[in-house]
Figure 1 (cartoon, rainbow, N blue to C red):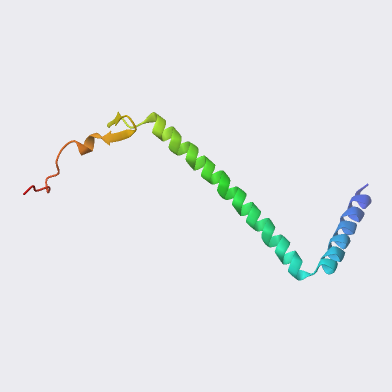
Figure 2 (cartoon, rainbow, N blue to C red):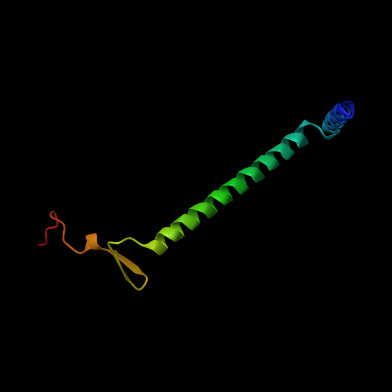
Length: 88
């Protein structure tokens, strides 16, 4: 049983090497680059989806010191004047 598994692995390696010789280095490099970019794209997409969900949840919870007027959020820190604000 173990011998058959090793034989199958050896055959697969030989077939992969033969295909590599037939295809050529340039095409192999292109295929690997496409695979890497697809992997990177899917990883970035998942990350962006997670971040979007987190931002939406934070917006739904809201902050305790923020007043909402329609679509406008007004933090309570905007209510007073700053000490360095001089009106002329």
